[in-house]
Length: 179
Image (cartoon, rainbow, N blue to C red; front, side, top):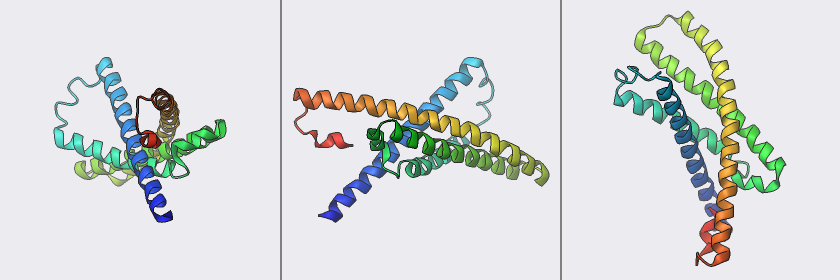
């Protein structure tokens, strides 16, 4: 019986990490693309980029986000928000750390691939990595912390909606509300 409960908890954690990481990446991508489109920054840039490199960059960023989200949620997941501000603060700190890792690793990966493809000198690569990864880590950390706040708001709203549905009898089976 304990094995079954542990298996369900593990599966629930994997599903939660997958949903949170996918949601955060899609929101971040949409906000970034809409802002770049509105400012005209995408004009002419995407024409030479191609589908395969675009999918590869998105997949790399999604893998980083999925791994970091799984780590950030490993300490109780969004259910930790039930501990009030202490739980929220803990998740924000873990989200900041995860976001910093994503930002730094993403920039480092893109710079390395770009350097290999373009034959950039090692000194240029080291300088970009030293300064850029630190800056990307800070930006990623801020985005990670803000993403946790967005996730917490969605988690709260979903809990309110599920609570209303189960109270009104609109759902015959409230056991799925645990996800």
